[in-house]
Length: 164
Image 1: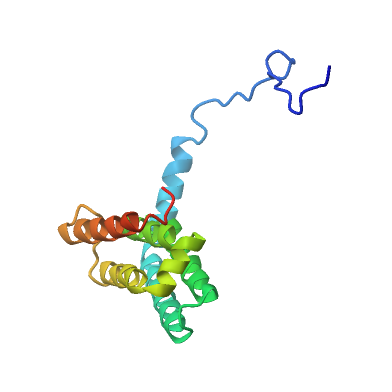
Image 2: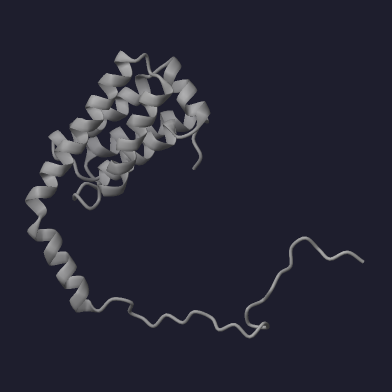
């Protein structure tokens, strides 16, 4: 009889202790200090967000100049990924959502191919991000933010190139 290629080992039966996390992991005081630190750099966050959106616009212009090469789309995706990750921290959850939609659009090879053939949806995402930050549209609770996000996500979903 041959041994199976993979063997399931239940750590409880093998005598391994489980990881026990005691709640809360962070004290209320630590969370309050972190919130206070974020508030103290709040003014800088708007500058950082503006700079990131400007970097995205430069990446878009470079992509246009390069004929929407794979490398230029990857540059756009890199900045979009940063905006996706930091938008909510900057106080703009809508930036996170639009950045996520842009990432979904161009993170796959098929998405990049679609964007190379017709970059209008990439441009629409960049323009939406610029408008949201410029006009201080922070959430999809704002009617314009909701409409922008819905239109972008619907068009990305229609293409069928993005994992969900």
